[in-house]
Image 1 (spheres, rainbow, N blue to C red):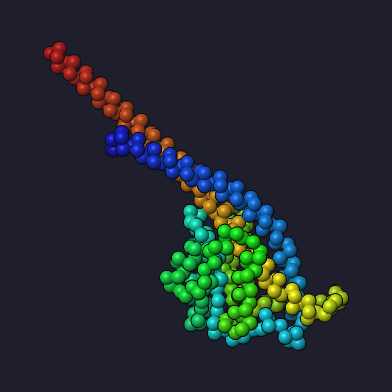
Image 2: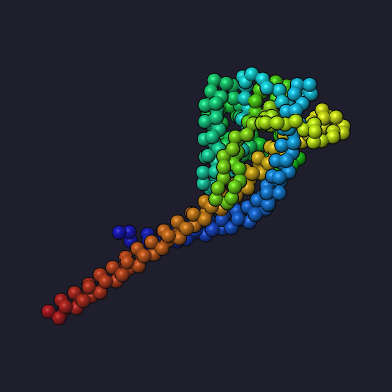
Length: 286
């Protein structure tokens, strides 16, 4: 059994760790509320815009010359991997990295695949195995639509000039504080709506449908990428809050066990001292 000093040092160390994890949990909880409100407010707008755009694009067929819907033979692929800059958030980053690796090694095996990392954790791990051409980890310093739109414009240009035949996004979708769903979404080319997408009978287009699509597509793609990063940002704080909550509970349990061990060791030491005193007294009497 460890001596009393060692146990006291361990209790102090665990208590210090518990204070840190508890503080991190409270910070993440405060940030989560703001991030959750932002993504909750944004989703209906983003989903409706994407639905409308897909319906218009699929009803246009080929006469629009829509460069963002062009389906080409897949030779070169871009995978945008959205992770966090910091750890201590459970399996949040690990799940995205595993999904990205499986996507590259499975669906796109034999294809030329490049990665655009958004977040340091994805860049650090995937950069050792794959070709990471860019890292936008600084986006979290000022997560605004305009800053994300600049990245989306670069992706759109890389697709339209033929550098990449397909672009996919891998990120964590926020469900609740304890649950994040790893998503793989096709960014380009635009996925047409399944089923009947004829909107001619429902809308009067002014100006023409082609002009509307040309203006909506860039905005919709920017919104899609912004929503994905916002989803990941909210998921990160939810995952970190949950992880720090569990860490705090585990530290509390360990501290209580150490205190019990300390009390038992202290009682044993006191008992030994009493026995030594009694033994010494009996020896003197004899």
